[in-house]
Length: 516
Image (cartoon, rainbow, N blue to C red; front, side):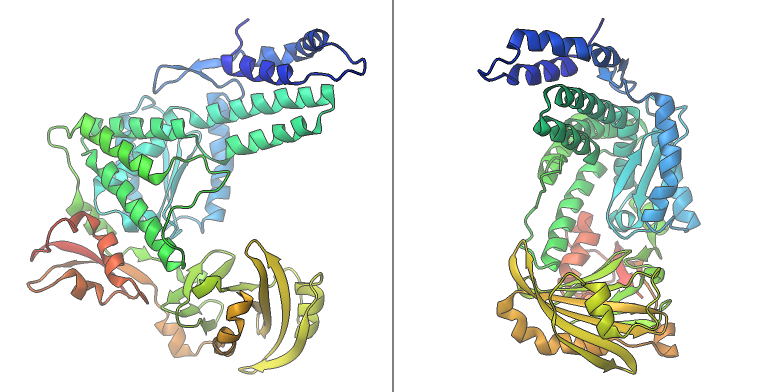
């Protein structure tokens, strides 16, 4: 009977560490025999290795067949669409991405697999894959790309995860570890072992390992070169990702350095860049290799940038929601971040504004706003200064509290509004040393919350990618001055046109800008 080295080593390593004390328990040798007897059914499950279609290597995939991969992709696809604002319904872009993706997939080791390529209506820069050939790319990522080879590099990387069956490997290894540790925990009654089982599965399912990410890069370069794309596109886009992450961090008031959490198993962006450069140079550009800059910019011209009006629009320091009929303005120095469930504004000294909507399932039409704050919004929090307000004709209320966070004690100011259709809320969070300095600005933000006039609703148009020709005398400084950002306009222009940053702009060059 074949048992994977991974499973065998994991099991015996755990067994060897569970020694008994001196009070007459079973000896270690008897324990081992007893454990092995109980684990024989488990070991039988661990026989399943398969030949990786992309690499030819033997990989452990006992707990997920290729049929199961297809089933998972079909089941999870609707959930992905729901969590990412659905499909970006721009037919020319959808056809374009499907054409590029299908060309790459036809040069993979699974040319007969029916791949599905979807553009998500999400301004976050992201791309990922589900097992069974479901590949997702956001419009936020497409807005960052400059040429077809960059898009191809992203899609080819995700195709690599599918063809190498990385999800099946990750899931099977997690299940083997989880099941083995759970059996051992039941035998020895060791709570720590049982907890480790749950953590192991969670860690495996969180993201791809470094090895899997690097293998997907290797396969991505392979598919790009086979399809006739210049692999330099993968290199330049990785550099864009690093610069974008740094710029977003700076806009959020951070220092721009990379941050990593305990559960992150993706390799550092800088590591990925070095690897992508090495792979691109090793493979070289095939004869007639294309970047496809002009073709891509023609497709990207007019594409939605940033917020979809259905989710509300950021206009500098203003947040405007034409569908829900309200607007507000955050203080100078604060940057807005929009999501499906809330709006965040990050300011100096870690000051934060959180705006959201009360649970629409609960009817608070007859609940006084003071009662709502105290009994419904923060029933477990000791509040003070609770008072009723009138804000632009709307009933509102406010209260103060002190909360404990990872950054220590923070002051909290709560404001709730009874809007005609819902209850909306501000939570202003500040370190105690800056609360006083921001009080007036927070009050202005509170009283800026108002319904929209008809003219304001008509003027609430989204931002879009515009592709323009450079004229004589145009410079990055001049062209960037029109961008609708509060700060760092030149840096945003250079990011959007990063592939031209190595030389001066020339008349006739095509560049991306952001237009209303």
